[in-house]
Length: 233
Image (spheres, helix red, strand yellow):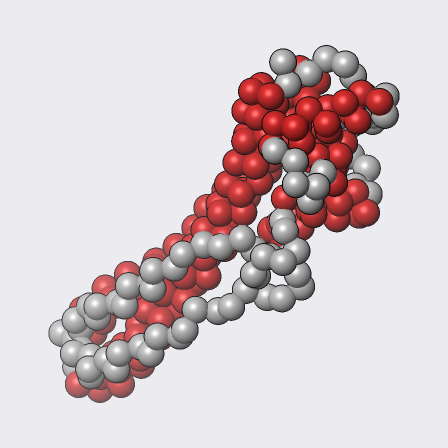
């Protein structure tokens, strides 16, 4: 598939993300949540599994990099000729005229037809649904990549954690001279707990940000579909 026109991707991005909104498509990175200090762990007991800190609860937000990515997905799936996005572009240009919403949609529809667009309203809903399908396909691929990342990063650390805990239980029953080995392993176990929390938090935050961004795009398209059906009869 050919690379999408970057200018088209930016235009599509502007359809869905208002430039004046905070932390979205303005080039300003999202404000990071305050870092919570980790509790100081008590000295580990040799041979005993150590409790691990739970990942901090994060809430997703519209992420500029995901917004740009989804806009490019839509641009890549933009067919030749006027369709839903040309209609939406016209509709967006009417948003500051103070017209009632139904009049905006009707005026945009009239302009769309005047520019050579189809006279069949179903063209708008059909192409809008095609864009939703493209977003859903991208979301499925993203979800698989998240699951693979969790399995590779967190799963590997958890397996190492279990192996070291089992080894410590055996070492605790052996001679005193191997106590240094147990202590070294316990140090690593403590570090693994922090790594698990950090990796899980990062991946979960990315997934939540993607879901919020995905919902933002999808709901706007669905809202337009409903309004097209309501106003353009």
